[in-house]
Image 1: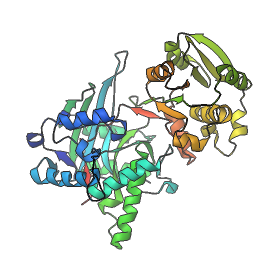
Image 2: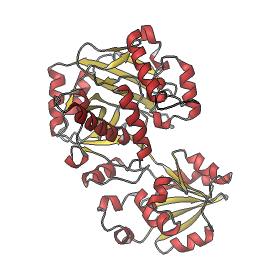
Image 3: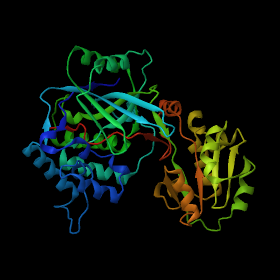
Length: 432
């Protein structure tokens, strides 16, 4: 099954680079243009210059954000801003955070290298569809830098309850690195040179499958980059670093794992009518009119069954509840039962395609559909007329992710949003 290994990570030297909290960022794909500029200004050594460089006027094939990242990486190495650990290490990473209600939570896992395997081998399993544009961007960056700057976030099942206790025992003392990011989340890292305990953990993973939680684009990119190098080199060692990718692995049963929903906002629909839409859906969904739209998210989370909030900008909202229990069997019989029972599958196939004219190609191109993880934005964009209506969803559950991936199926895009996000720049992996 999964083959993992310790590695010599690239890490910032704070005595040269500066305070680590000024050097790291969230994942590139949730950074806005304004935030990108802010990270540039924060510290001249910030990892943003490597992971998510700015596009500049006059960029060309020979000079662009990718070539600049490659040169910046060389400069960081030459000046000692970045240094490679002397020994192969396993990195134990923990985040401690608070929920809105003040409750404290945490999750802990390991940063390591994982041998790249095609999805059809059933060792590393995806759960979401991906977009080709993002994969092209990450491929160009990898070609220019030969480096992983951020970890792919993956889950494992610890049914024998042996792996996490071993990891926890190795991180019993004070962490080697501890700081809080601007959002108040504590970032803790233990650097464990390879020893018998590390090798035991590595051995335990040989019986495990890995489920990608966040980073599908980067995993597929790493596969493509590996294949490119294999073809160019002709001969290579199986333990060559380009045959591996950097991952963060966390126990799927960890109580600190949180998945937030991603809501759907619809725009530019021709002849959209709230009244007409509700008449069409009521054959398969019960329709309940409710007041106070800002309570919609909270109300949805309390209910049993498959429920969706529907908002059109008024001082009320609707809750749509699936009542036709055979609807999804009829619409997508080729899919597994876990896939058919997903909230996003029911919304996409049972509502958006049938009644809004938004097919899979439309969704992929986001012609009439946009996404937000922010409930308030989903409401405000309807109120200000930017979009015509919003659908509010409950979060996908961890066990649903596992069930779908075991059938080797991929959920629709934007099915999950794991939070908090791993920081980029705490450990990096250079292939050569």
